[in-house]
Length: 401
Image 1 (cartoon, helix red, strand yellow):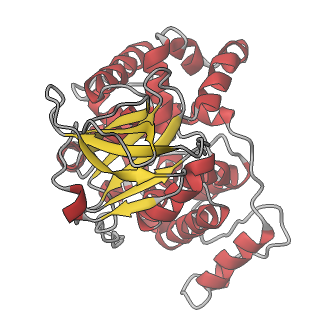
Image 2 (cartoon, one colour):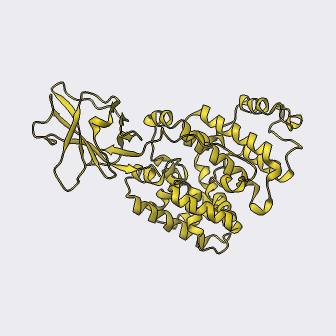
Image 3 (cartoon, one colour):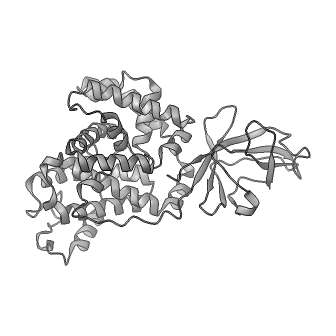
């Protein structure tokens, strides 16, 4: 539980905040749970997933800054997944057996979307995969799994519900699924089935032991509530209380001690709508477009990330250090028309350091717009386009939905 919160948020303090707010919400709303809505485990996971999403939006800038020294593709997780599939099959993991029947590309799309708190477009960009093909791979994988796994009842939107559970849908797509949940209780149940299967991915994460201060903080924040008389003593190994119904308590105990039992979609929006109101943070600090710049020859390691803000300004952040000779500079270019030759220089830089551009300097930006960094003589190119080697390039992707 803590391990995945830390994996998504990249910050132990934020991860502990997610765990704390999740357990407090469970504690205060356990009586609202109805077994007809789906497994208690899924209900708990949905709250946690939602809280992680809220924290991700609140601390987007700092999370992205901290991610500069990590691998955004989670490639090591994918490698471990591939390596462990046969071990999982030996231990009778049906899910891994069917997953292994898929081509590698759909597997990459599924596992990276599962571990991402970003939109589909952002995750597709990190994978150097066009959004259309990324969605096709997601649906291909979900269609295969839903046919093979016997736990799914028939529903025309099985794959779309699974896509919602993975996360990252556009606002319009998400609203459609939430409306479906409100109209069809079986749809919400299918979502919890998907979520339960996806927890198999968590075998790839190293376990994180919750520190004592985390549970102490949870107890402290529950003081003064009408349930505080039932707050457990922390001398025991796990939190428990007669206040929590038995089926919820059992799931909580499993969650507290077992990292494998984690992850969910934001079904809390549908399941808790009548009992829990959570204010979403303002999205004014969220980017409207991003570009991931990498070596055009290798296209493997992300070198720069460009974030276009809501006001049209831009932030350029390096993820690697580029050392160049004293008689050379790096020049930043943009080209809005891919079929034309309308290169425009945005200036030169001497080293890989973050910098910002105001909207009037950057000019109009559109999805698909090309950005490049080339190696030029001091003073920049004399030809109004890159004259030296193009070190890095990437195109803008709309992530505002």
